[in-house]
Amino acid sequence: MLNFFLLILIYTCIYAFMSLGQNLITGYTGMLSLCAAGFFAIGSYTTAILMTKFAWSWWSTVPVAILLSALLGVLIGLPTLRLKGDYLAIATLGFAEIVRNVINNWDALTNGPMGIQRIPMISFFGLKVSPYSKYGFLLLEVVLLAICWFLLERLVKSRMGRALEAIREDEIAAASVGVNVTKYKVVSFAIGAGVSGIAGCLQAGFVLSVSPGSYVFMVSIMVLCTVVLGGMGNFLAVMLGAFIIQFISYLPQLIGLSSVIPAQAKQIIFGLILVIMMIYRPQGILGRKKRDNSRAQAFYDQANGDTRNAGRKDIGLEESGAKCKEEGRV
Image (cartoon, rainbow, N blue to C red; front, top):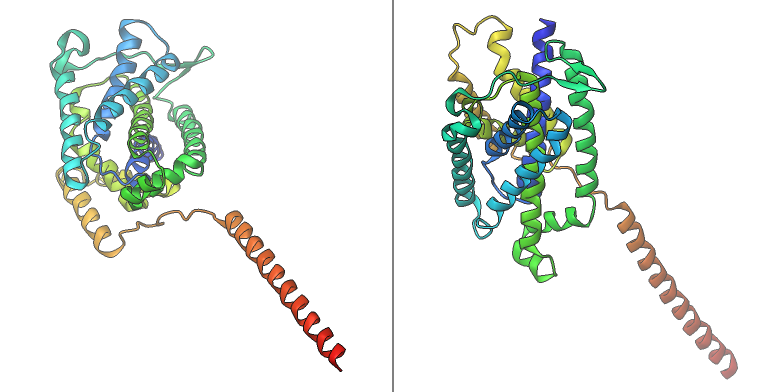
């Protein structure tokens, strides 16, 4: 039971990485993307190919996987800038399927449908981070996830984060005040794709094998469900959503009913979650994180207070002058 719960936590962290990237693209920039599975596959296969064919360490493959996933994000972002809503979702889904089919048919590099087996374990200063000892692998994931969450939180609180939120609310208004919509959309896609690529690296390092069947359309739907369930525009919320989704996925095995409940039931459950959340709580469980405008409000209040005080001084001078005139007349 404990090992099974650790497995849920490990996959929660993997899907949390993809959900963080999806949240930046969808929750903060307002672009409905269904390409998470494609970014996930790029990260996994980059790590697998470099470790098995070129004897790279896992740590050295991660930056390459991030860069290649980000490049795919740019390639998706540039031609789809004019698309919105359902049209953008269909276009990004098409890109994800292109990635999967290329992987499935490029036998010389990816070994086709058979995938890549016997990926070396992750090592840290000579110590093997074995997936069979789940505590060490989970600790690695938690540390990397905390770093990623911290950096993304800093990003969305910066000038770029405000620009992304402006684009989400109204592209035309954002462009009219000087926001470079094209630039920030492409950068958002690139960063979100790079973060999802890290999930692929962890997947390859944990399973020690990759195959095209692991990167199907259902993966993108699960990531989207995670973001919607937790709360778009809230990084902590999507991590909570990742845990709930993974718990639901493994619940039949956890309670010993995997032979009774078919695997297809999971897809029905995820569809119901999306429908129910969109109808009754579209903001998600925790909702969108509100921006802290206390400093700006304090500055605004101070400025208005100074103006009011200056006005009171002027009024006081006028009243004093009028009083002196009246006394002079008397």
